[in-house]
Image 1 (tube, rainbow, N blue to C red):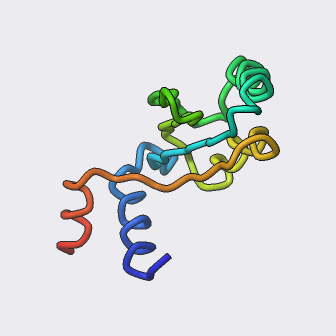
Image 2: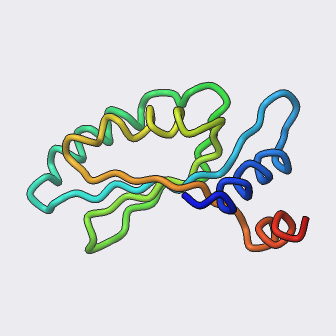
Amino acid sequence: MTPQLRNLIIQNRIYQKDGESENMLFVVTARWKPENVPQFIKVATEEMQKPLPKGTKAIGTYLLLGRCQMVLIVDALNEKTIFKLHQPYMEIAECDWAPAITPEEAAKALAE
């Protein structure tokens, strides 16, 4: 991660400050092999019934048809929270995450 991107992420957290918490949007993906569909469905069904960590809000969960991929957009406190969310899937899927900001937020942060 470049220093400029890191600064942009830190600045975005400041813009999204909500009371005492500093939340940020993250995009979490999980990609699995077709032969792992039954295992993935089992894990996903179990995990989605559990409450999200405190201070975390799911914006949306999507399955990409024909790609064996799930995308979760989540408003979370930090990267540790995101790791906790995708950790149960790591043995059966390739998981990844990234912080997300709107183009307007990026322009505002880079202008300062």
